[in-house]
Image 1 (tube, rainbow, N blue to C red):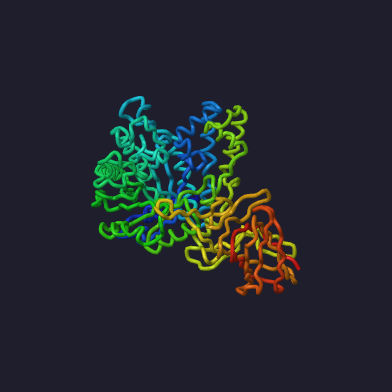
Image 2 (image 1 turned 90 degrees about the horizontal axis):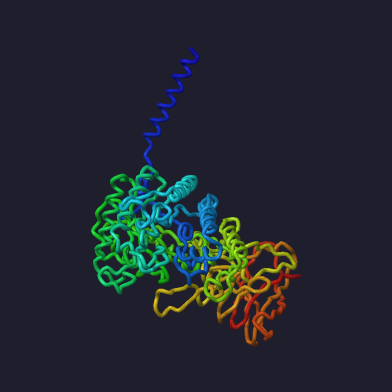
Length: 582
């Protein structure tokens, strides 16, 4: 009797669980009017990060711009360590570059979505390597990586958007971004390449059709191709884009045969900026994805996309942007969100400072680059292997340099009008505060610099942001030195703010550590909004890194928070640190 009762209860539990599971509405994203919404109809602003450099290496990410495409990087690596070791290198690369800890971190920083730039060759063979012409061999590695990434995203309630970054044959004249070999038929020159791409998307859609944390399918990244005029290398002058529209319609049809749940993101020609001929819509779950780099963050810069949104009743997504300064990031994200547009940044990690995570350059890397560039001797296989193994270790999150200023600029600064300390701001007598640790915050709030961003795609705006490209991604110019970093290229009127927490009674003096090749620099020190009566004159020290300490008497600081501002009335000097004393 007891066994019978247990069996009845057990079966009832299974039935109830099955009914509950079947009745729950899955939370797929979808296009609704001008917005991306969830199953409850709530508008979702996607705040995403692209995982560039993981499945697809682009040369510039690793100071290999002179080599370019991933297949050529691989050839150069094979040249120094051999084919077998190169296979091991790329296996370890995929394992180390992005792991669950990376996704957990991005969720903690505030991102709610991930864009995965996929290389087709992790999912299927190139057309020329297929054992049977017209057939498609599927590779486990790409699908397994995607499955793992999706599981990590699910665990963090993050949407995963699949992005075909490198399509069979390569979809543009910018060879690096699609790992294109110009000696072989491109995506647009080969019906076989396009058929394989469509088959791949059908396979992916079939696999993930019921996955609610898949945010959608970004089916072809940044076409840049002149269909009407082959000399229009960037595809910006194209008027009809007929082959692109045909492909987008065909791939949509293939996806919809197996998946009617997910958004399909559409990128135009001209690096996702030219939508001539792409409309009208052919599906009711489409989103227009435009890309934005190196132009001013003003309404006029995105108005043409808003006009398309209004005309065709389609949501917008800034599917890729970044590679600039913190000021530019904050302004671009504010511009998007003010207009109800979500975004995905490029990228989470590489060498350099303008992303959340910096991959450190391994010892010996410079010699390897010199050899590859034809400027140095070939390293031994042992030395090359050691350098490359260190590079693999440096890919891991725990070995990356975290640029908290970048994350602060992308989230807090978009809606905040105050500065916050960059690091440990606790001050006692004898504390040395690095000049480069000024507050995090917007331009004119935490600092003022005459040049805060790069407008490299805007003629006549020849600005750079941080000229030293070191330490932080703000407009302030920072250069490494033998004992850390210092601020250089200081111009008239520029200033830096430091919010400090005084722990000792009796702090009544400062020492400014500065250097200058010639006399003439002048500083005004502000404490809690009040300028000191006398300016501080910077003497000639014999060089830009020949440091001297200038003592400054200040009103005694009480315990608690105080705000200091160091203002260059006349620039021309370098600034290393502030030392606090009694």
